[in-house]
Amino acid sequence: MNLQFNTHLADSYKSNVQKARVLSEDWIAKNMFCPICGNPTLSHYKANKPVADFYCNHCHSDYELKSKRNKYGTLGTRITDGAYETMINRISSFNNPNFFFLSYNADSVINVLLIPNHFFTTDIIEQRKPLSQTARRAGWIGCNINIASIPDSGKIFIVRNGVEIDKQYVLENYKKVKSLQTKNLDNRGWLMDILTCIDEIQSNEFSLRQVYEFVDILKQKHPTNNNIEAKIRQQLQFLRDRNFIEFTERGKYRKL
Ligand SMILES: [Zn+2]
Image (cartoon, rainbow, N blue to C red; front, top):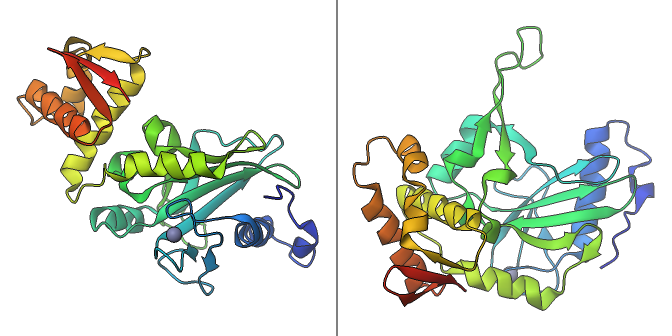
């Protein structure tokens, strides 16, 4: 992987948005493997294809690329995306692609993060303020993807702080979370919530009682559910069946 951008490509573009697009897409096309199946390259969809930006011609996974530039190439907590409603519809109909979040400084890639599509819930999509009446697209509502609210296991780094992560490690990380796919949005939401609670518990071993401490927070997110404890136990069972956590003794678990 060569972390340098081919900056000459941007010379003929005036707008910063276009420059960013040209450089980051060129970088992915030349350097990125498929983090889902390990295929050495990804293919570029023709311009303006609404589904995604890249695809793998081996496992047929789709990828959308979002990039951001700043002085230190930091990723930050939010990534700006397109129309709010479109994004919510895509998540709700299970046809959102996997995402690459790429951040860079003047001329080189500092972070590349894969968020698998099954980690997207409507909770992580934030509505931006409608564009003002004087704007060309007055009233249009965009969205931000709140990376900070995605569980740690759904953030698979490929490049982190300017350092390339070993490809085998990336593939193993994906394999570990692949089993967490669900075909029900409500289940997905609960699963992400419980994963987030487990992330908050610092130690590797934890008890059911520790997860119950999040009941009040979960109640605020799911006000119509009157049996949060049962839901917690159900999700822990799901995670246990998928070898994400193991049961050590009554009411005790270990992260795997
Ligand atoms: Zn693939």
